[in-house]
Image (cartoon, rainbow, N blue to C red; front, side, top):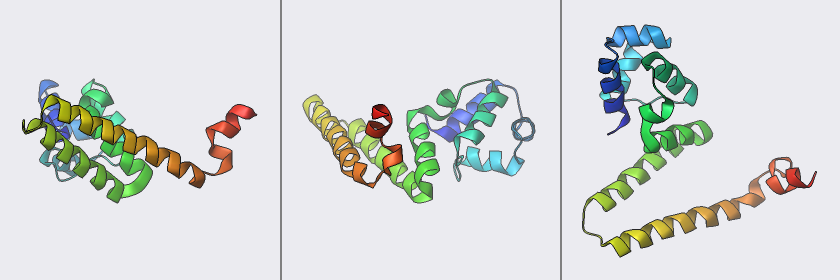
Length: 140
């Protein structure tokens, strides 16, 4: 289930209209409508937390794992990063859901994605300012 479906289902379960949810969360009704249509997603966790509180749930339940990744990517890297993560999640989900890969191939794909992440993280350390590097903080 994707964010727009989770939001609508939780809103209905809470017996709220879009206007009531918007008021309770401190945002416009149009914003809630756009979220439920899937034409927009929250840009930061602050908005997600407001919606979750208004619905009496958690950000994790409202967004799901992929939604958390997308919002986090948007916060850290902007709209392009969010689109890239959303596209990657969609492609990987489609690849696994298609049923064309064996269990061994799916495990191999996940291992490759995991390794790619750690390689990129290691390669990007040199671009992190020294004052933010963990090694520097741990030594002090």
